[in-house]
Amino acid sequence: LFRRHPDWMVAEDGRPKVCYKAWNKKIYALDTTRPDVLAWLGEVFRTMAAAGFSYFKADFLFAAAMPGERARPVTPIQAYREGLRAVREAVGSGSFLLGCGAPLLPAAGLVDGMRIGEDTAPFWKTRPSAFQGPNAYFALKNALTRSFLHRALWLNDPDCLLLRSSRTELSANERTCYALVAGALDNMIVASDDLALVDDAGRALLDTALRLRGGRAVVRGLLGEDFFLVESRGGRAGRVDLAVNLSDDRRLYKQKAVPPRSAVLIR
Image (tube, rainbow, N blue to C red; front, side):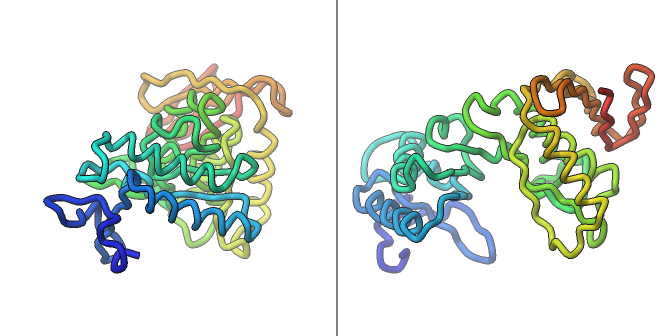
């Protein structure tokens, strides 16, 4: 597509602008102010919908909002919304559209679900680097601090649960913490393991996370030191109070010990 239509790309000084680099390649962004680009996007997604797909994940959406030269003088956010609207209309209201790697608020009203934090990973690192990258700690923290967006603008996607007990650096406490928080927050639940590596304990943890869903959750302690209380009401599990300790130190809540990097059901 790039070779055939370099003029379809967001530009800088009249030439296609490199938006970012990944997979040892230069990545460019479509200029979604162009009618021919919007028509192409619509055709791609309508074709997939006609083939029977009803769940769509659109990733790296930030590229559509890169500053640069476009066919029409609009802001990057306006261009982003025009492109995302074309995708929404193409897949139809009966399909589920998940935004990912996206400017959050400008996607409101156009997506059904949204990845609201970092990608998770089979390791937990509390110290950010210049580029954090996938990391279970930051993915989980974003799920907690952005919980208020859930069911207000879309369904929050905290990224997948990692349930396997082998080929992972995550401890049992860390895996449990992630799953219980996702469930208590009523978030989207997605598993992403080689299923042959998920043992009975991992399957039981998934069942527990699913049983915790369905309530309306409020998160307390957003200004604290990595210690949170998730209060969920109205779900199948009834009243749920989950103490969440993302820190590296043991905490106490109502005389219950909450080990480091773990979550404990108080009620």
